[in-house]
Image 1 (cartoon, rainbow, N blue to C red):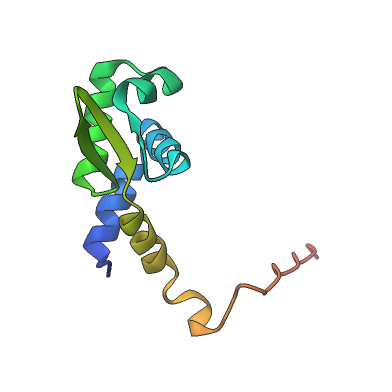
Image 2 (cartoon, helix red, strand yellow; image 1 turned 90 degrees about the horizontal axis):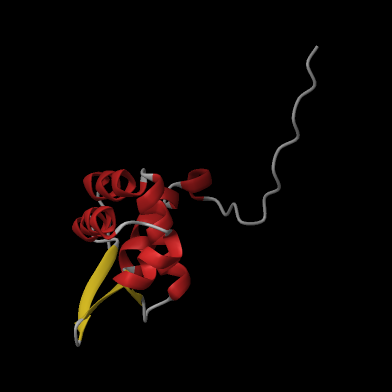
Length: 111
């Protein structure tokens, strides 16, 4: 998935809330199978009404997906969007040179 700046801004905006970031991280840990909304609420101690608001926001940003299984709504991370966002953030890293093995620069001492 190729990201444009507008897509990145929408995704980053959705993640810029403590509750939504927590939901997204929980769903990333859950993997592709995801988890039911009730389990998300239990694990995060979130009331159902505010959870619905945050899930809807993450869904609109295409960071998570929703599916129905019987009477349950199951949410899972959208790994394509997550990887697209990470790719967008790092596509010009280090001017195109590999930076995976570069150690962090040493701090300068104050004079």
